[in-house]
Image 1 (tube, rainbow, N blue to C red):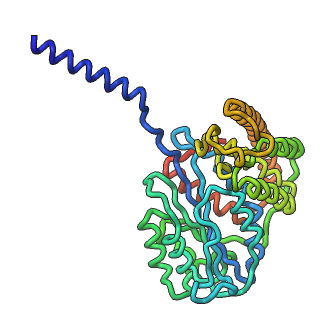
Image 2 (cartoon, rainbow, N blue to C red; image 1 turned 30 degrees about the vertical axis):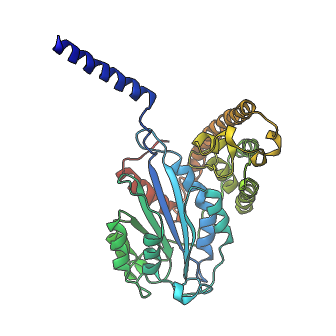
Image 3 (cartoon, rainbow, N blue to C red; image 1 turned 180 degrees about the horizontal axis):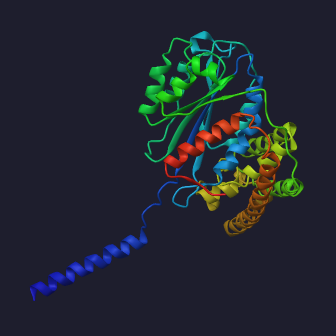
Length: 376
């Protein structure tokens, strides 16, 4: 009898635990992460490099849009440093952190368009160490953490030993990729490959002043039209809403000022999962769980939502989310067609050795080692 009672108690406890597990499901594992710190030489001879960085950031995002690990798209965070800038005090190493690791890609674009070149001392070891020490790197063992440094002076310059900086980086799981703006042999002889080798990275030489001409594609007009519709699905809210929306529009104009191709690449990037604006857009904020619609104060709501009861707010945001999802799906499909068209047009062109191809080559190779796959 006692044995039967004991068994009954055990089964009751097991049932209760099972019910509790259903009521409180385990939290979802965080999405896989890719962290990219871009370190740019902004000394007087680097105008071509800065122009490439401004124009190619969206192509990099579009490539990452095809990355998956265990079926999940990665979170992307980008940081930006400049070095070799004479307007920055020598005590600071002629360098500064412009953007910390951030998912706000419009802010990264904004800061790239603000960069100006000015002659200075280029201390590669010091800026690498600054990025290693000054950024909030992920502790996740499967996340990809990488530094890309580009410049045209000897890698060995400055008071900080580049060898120690690169060893410190890889000791924390941060890969260092080096891009020399000049001939391969010159970069090889001035330490750029040695730095990459020390931190499991990739060394590439590019011509910073040479970039392939833009390609017009049959899909461009429709992608641009859908992009304008996509902008209408963003709902600016709260203290950051107005500035965030303004920044988005400004970066649209900045991309268009470079070429129609770059403008289209930006539209495509805005259809990627890595482009998220939960700090100011109510659709992204609601989707990510950053805000609860019913808890927002009236003053935080945009004009078109003022006076709405919580159920109406939910319906309005859901409608915008549905519209955005449909537009992004159409843009992604058209962009895939466009990419095939552009590859065919450029298949007979010699490689220009551009900044974006150097970054993407390293990114693909190193991401695949971390278990990511790129699905076209």
